[in-house]
Image 1 (spheres, rainbow, N blue to C red):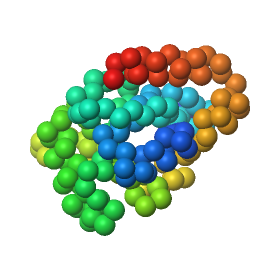
Image 2 (image 1 turned 90 degrees about the vertical axis):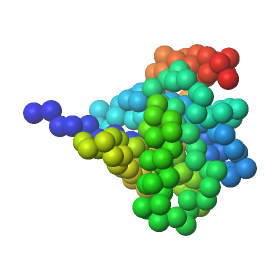
Image 3 (image 1 turned 180 degrees about the vertical axis):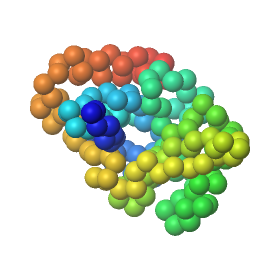
Length: 165
């Protein structure tokens, strides 16, 4: 019987630090869903970040386009207020259902999913580092991954994103 593989988000440490820096406005994280798996865990990989003129005008050049929501301080907001705010963002920009909210020293990843009766439900994907997302420095990733084609794919995709924005 095939056991369902656990999923986590892998993000370069350098990109996590960019997202945590509140001075980085209009930041978008880019990556691919199910980019890599080690046999036990399937990783969604965030490998690029870009400041763009309008976050919600970004077309999806990759499977994961995740706006960093730091235009208001959600660190002290209740879960209900955060859910309402992100559901409203999703309602205004329906092609975006993934969001990241910088907290004091970690990122919270959120997904907004439609509910059966047309309302929006908010599902927390990750509440803290280690639970559903992990970090690795880009240098360590490049030095230790045994898949040169993955590294080449990341570089090509970054170039494509940079040319687009």
